[in-house]
Image (cartoon, rainbow, N blue to C red; front, top):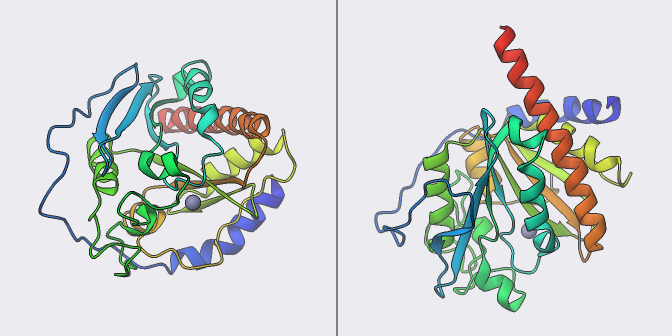
Length: 266
Ligand SMILES: [Zn+2]
């Protein structure tokens, strides 16, 4: 605990200096008919460039609203085999009382189908959000929200108004959790829980490279929603991944419950 808190405190100053808000709304909208209402079974909330369903499910009945993005880079699928089990976990205690969890199975099913980071238009969805630091490039899109998948995520966020967004990735230097916006306490809770199963789990407050137009930049830094970027180790053993999710989300649920109690006492 002390180790995590120290790291977080050290980087608090850096985070405080991050840029403010910008908006760059897209006029056209690829997903006009999507039904975003909560469903306790998997159902499409939108579609990819190639027409693949992007499925979501909502479990739990707690006061906090949490959005879990199961995948956004199609070559980082380490968490995919555990998504069903994670949904079951969140539907049980302490998850069920802690939050209402919307889980998007995979925001980039076209990329996942061929093991490619980008979507079918070869755009990196995690560079396609209208963050202040968006950079127009071939792989980022001509403009923010040029892709139906990034557009859909923004619609879900507008609909749900989540208190926390969690996205799963993987990297050679994983496993660790990174956060944007006011997500440090959530990151501590997740890393502590995941760390009980694997001591390598740690908090990395800065990715060490620029992430213009990322989900974390836009929703976290610009809009102030706590974001956890959970980075598994690339090709991490699926059971290790599951146990980290189990420990991490149980710990996070207890943290959210204690926050709710604190609010009631105020
Ligand atoms: Zn990634």
